[in-house]
Length: 190
Image: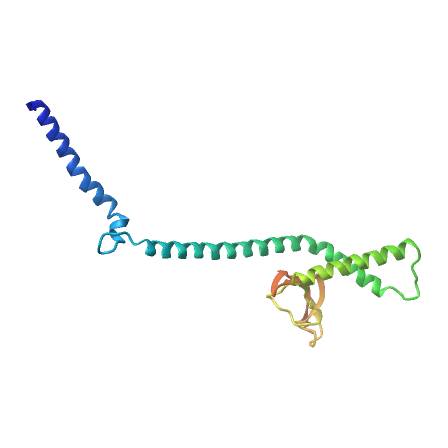
């Protein structure tokens, strides 16, 4: 070899040698070197166990997220139906309070019966989903489930009790879906 070729070959060797240990030091030890048997074979069982645990954790997390998304969707849908459901409940209460001597005929009777059928189906669906109406009238005010709209003077026995329900409240699976808006009695200063 000529001097020129020899010096080029030496330079190439010196350039390659220092870079290889530095690159390996920056990256850290190779996975095969960390997890290997004393005879130099990689430990595939250890890798399998870790991968299996990671997958199991992933599966559990996605199941929790799926249940959470379904519950959120159910809640959102129920909140949209509540105003119509409340109107139908209030109308049924009005019909039940109507004078008994007043008989409906023809279309009015069909309309009333149809509304009652629709309301009973809605009640079945809401009950199946765990949605129930709060019973708040003549009960002590509960700030966790009710919002006070107004306070009116009342007797000492009625102080702190819910006297009127302005907007119905609903629970879903033991949690407040929509708080009841109420008027509470306040002892008058007479």
